[in-house]
Image (tube, rainbow, N blue to C red; front, side, top):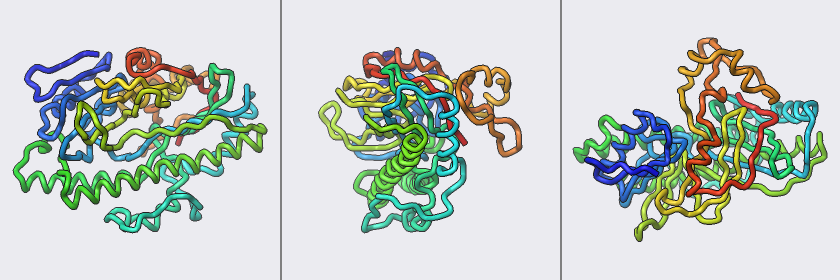
Length: 387
């Protein structure tokens, strides 16, 4: 861990081994923010985000910062261990084909309402009221970008599958709406906390803040139920095609704010691209497509606000990757793994933004946080579904 404190209101404690300038500048903005508390923690997967670095953790005593939660509220991972000890390529393709027919990807939604266990609250916020009619069609869909469904071989001798998805368009609308409201409040109070850093905050106790917390919590529930419904379809595929039964199952999320006690105070912890790693808590840290993922156990390190990384973290943006990388070298990085061909961007150009080379080395990321987590199972990809 490295500590930066010169000319800062609170220190920055970093586990990032190759912190880029943009992420460092955003961390400085957080450290000098009027609402932040004690220190800012940067995980090994840290890279520049919108307002706050992805792979960052911070605490506020009396405020919540919507952009420090992010647009995909409750985005997270679900990992399921099957009874299978192996799968051949034919069965992998059959399972993936079954799932693709039943789980919409990218911008696609279901054409019929989906039965689900999501409990609608008695009081709606503005985004919930606006989106109520769409939720039953969005739920159970994967999304695009870095979201995926992956079939994996564990070093425990078992086949696993993993899902990465979140609150879909609902979470984005919640973040965008309340960030705008926070900017209005901050401007009214002549606060300059957000003018250039996109870190407008909502004071605790204000009605607008209560509404944000209400809708954020609903987005977390929506994201978790979204992953559960996708997992049901993947389980059905494994069961019908390979006769699998299912064992351990874990679900963790990143991109959220929650009240926790740290350094003898109850504070609003913001984890943006970071997951909770309390002592003994099971976590999931995925690599990129084409590289391993890990099931881990938290060590409860207070210096990271009991947190760890949420993945490998990017070393280049999507556009940069598509400009620098070639299709041939990306195909080579995916040798031996079943996956669909590389997609196209909105201009029709090949999109290499999710290639393994666009991400940090996952084993280095795991090693850099040895004081935060203990690796339990290493999962090697066999087949990947992406938009």
